[in-house]
Image (cartoon, rainbow, N blue to C red):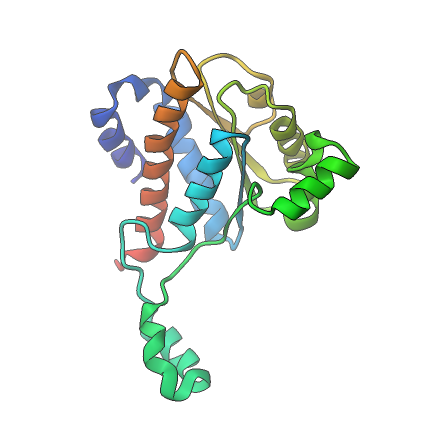
Length: 212
């Protein structure tokens, strides 16, 4: 399934042909983690922070599919909702994906008290556990706060996926898999990060929310 998804992606963006192996392996890591009840944590700075929030949004609620709740879940919840049970039809199946870039009070507290390099690692320590997955976005692969989180996640027994630029990087050394997108600058690299993570999200959604 991941290879088919990549073929669709590379047909639209031929310049991504070199990332097939890392894309397929990253997809498999995410699917395996979610299948076992794991959660996805996502981090990045600047534009990559926006991308982290974007990815969480595609997974927590419907992306390309409707994701209706199963009849069993509807029946289970209806007992509590009672006359409001029809409201349940607007809920969608979701996957636990959490952006570590979104809690401004927590991020600024960590930055102020411990230093900005710890803003993601401290959250990983407090929220994540072995079997979860960390997705690290950095166009340069040099972001100290992202690298710190990747190191800690690896030490905790988590799978770590990097989404970076074309240059060899310190971040990649601490990732289970790294998808290195081409580009001459941050903007060009981020322009290719988006179709990559959109296809990742589409494949994951199809795996969990399409009935066989």
